Length: 479
Image 1: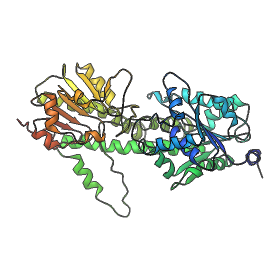
Image 2 (image 1 turned 60 degrees about the horizontal axis):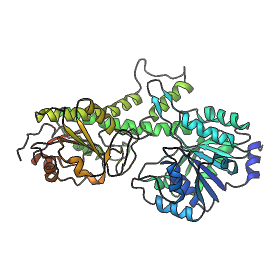
Image 3 (image 1 turned 90 degrees about the horizontal axis):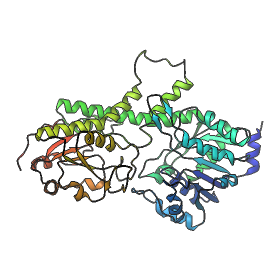
Image 4 (image 1 turned 135 degrees about the horizontal axis):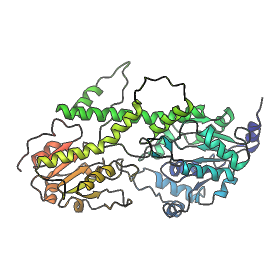
């Protein structure tokens, strides 16, 4: 039996015009790839003309990327689709009415993680803009990572209320979560399998039609909307859990006086049938928009959808939330290592100049969302230290001066704390850094295993490193 929605979609024909709401790390590359496909005629990127982000509109319409990290191929692709007249960025949401499909890629943070209440205000505004301009036979896809139950719950309710239409009858609705990492956005969209979950079979099929043309190695994996929501929150929760396991192991190795990287190499060497593990890397903390909050979306989902039915050890905390707390603790531990190093140097933290290398949370990126550098800075500023921040990709951050001149940041520094794995920090020379510091025994706290500990120790540095129990109590060398 053919449903009303199937009839509407068949009458409308193939998807030709697409809208992407949210011009950020997900929306920009997605819009560019849609526009580059011969299957689609026109793509609009929707961006509010606000004081904070309205500048993106003109940049994108010139074929320039507002993302300042290393993003291979993105700016070339933007120039190509702009020149071809297939992509346009606009603040005019009424154009949604002209489209066959619209996707939403809008951030969904938690303002208070303790009460498990997400801040859906930006997403809700985006959904309302779609609903006001929704027409029969259109497809709406939520790409944002959301609490399980949101697509067929809050999202559906708003769209139906604003449009007067009914999801699953008058328009198609699906969740197809993004699966990208900054620094490889285009490659990830093309090559990763795409999870597509509609609220009904017709919606799933229509969303599959939307994403299939941009996939190269990847394939579509169809499922229900709620299963797709749980899939996305779970994969980020598991990654956060794996990182937390390595961070806890690093803390153990420090306490036992051994090198966590030796242990990691040893464990990772065991391979064979039936052996599956992901030995990730410990570090100064987990940042970004996704890993820092998706655990809470999953937790809220089971509380709402599984209320009264979850069978779990009584009075035991969530393993996933505990992992989140461990990863949030790592910048605090970096401050602890800094204090220990200053104590070894017989110098107070108060009044010291500390150079923080890396404000972006991810290597070779300008993404500063939930950067672990910030809580570290706040802790030591509260203890009377002067903090100078360097990042080659970040030009500004609210309330924190970020400098591009590394030498200026290092000059006169009592301590150096490495928070990002930027390529620029891999070739740091201990002799040159010590000269800039001007101190007999400057401190270096390595949060990303970026420097040769022995080389810095030999030049008189007091070294501390995440997981480096083999070196954190080294003899101080008079160099």
